[in-house]
Image (cartoon, rainbow, N blue to C red; front, side, top):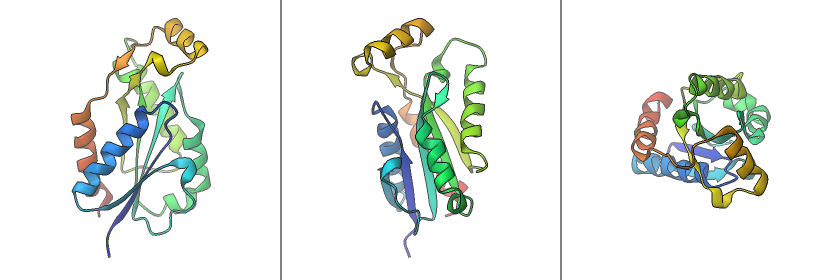
Length: 167
């Protein structure tokens, strides 16, 4: 029997989706059967041996779909190993403690689940993909603009997951 892993994500602007794809490819390269899908497309967790959940941070909050997914599948997710990643600019922000605050918010969003691995990756802010209000907000909070994703760190995290999953 092949070990099946679900990588489920929400990604309004595409950055989190690209990270989810990279994680899924690393797991596939390690020989696992992996499905990489948007959270809203998941209709069942049956047959999965582990789940990776990903979502972005916007304005100090995790996108609501992550919390809804955790609530909807709480019983099943509590019986299998899960890992989770959030994507945002907190890791490259200039405010002291911003990353720690983001980690706590993300951890609370996943509660009562206890992931075997949990992290926050630096993301991307592409002004071309933002609407007028979002651009204004980025300017007001002086958020860093650009692509800050560390593909080596993402790959390393993904390669460590099977050992943490115990699969």
